[in-house]
Image (tube, rainbow, N blue to C red; front, side, top):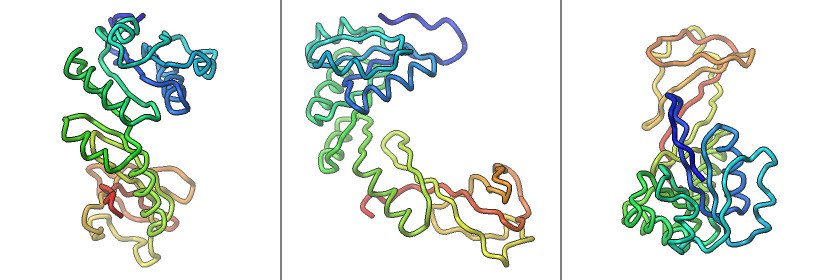
Length: 219
């Protein structure tokens, strides 16, 4: 079951619903980071995909069954992530966790973008792989290499921009970025990185900008 957290390091009691590709990958990563992980799944064989180093707790059963959730430790968990391939299952479990068990933070994976907006109206934090993939591809096609992350209900894209030669020698404060873009770092020719927070960096030959921007998921 879950253990209590008695150190300043933010180890969390996390309940994951679903042990498919997303679920077992998430469980393995969270376990590696030192969190206390419990996972619920309806297929026993899927648990075999968990890493040999996984030291969490597994529960076999249907995740919308309250007794199954209790056995998995939902009453002590701080975060629940419903990441099955079934959007309807994810929303039902997320609602149970939020409204009945009062889990502080609840996340639901939503594959159908049309359902994503509906889920958000319930006040749930969602992760939509479809929207994230589309937004990342749109920016990659237009800007080059990029990566996307979800923060709450928002998608933020990070991408690298080649710097024109006539920018060399200028200060960052002299550069005008597109609306919504924020410069977060500069990658140098030797692949090292300088953070841009509260600095007025002078641009060098071979530098590239690393920029963050809220994604327009409609593309």
